[in-house]
Length: 69
Image 1 (cartoon, rainbow, N blue to C red):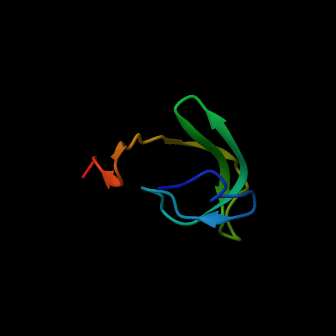
Image 2: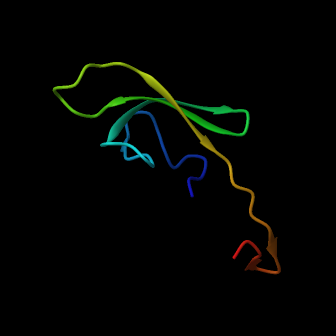
Image 3: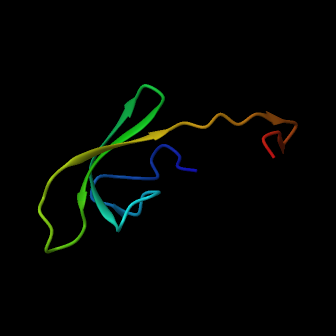
């Protein structure tokens, strides 16, 4: 789970289903989740930006228990 503030511009992260790490160039909120604009973190790869959307997950808590489990 990614919380607001966990990922900043300049971070290198590995996204689900990605071939390798990516460099985060921009983070913004979009409808239904976070939108990262990323480039490949490899030195010998072209610098093509790609938007990646991570959708939100709603979790219900009742008296300290996670009801999603």
